[in-house]
Image (cartoon, rainbow, N blue to C red; front, side):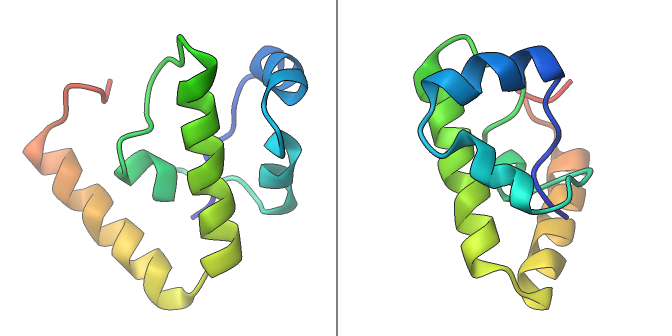
Length: 88
């Protein structure tokens, strides 16, 4: 688990616009994460969308536990089978 990696062009852009953006790099990226299971997926058309994603990534970093990772895995599986209009 860990924050989903962003393309380098987004890192360049948002590191200048979003406070604490680079904090998310203190943890290894993962295939799913807290932000993704809480609705922060897909394209970010507005800075506020990226700010929300970064808040959730930092929350994960500050509250990490083995049980939290298990919850993320289980919720990812649920969303995968349930379907989600933001997932693609």
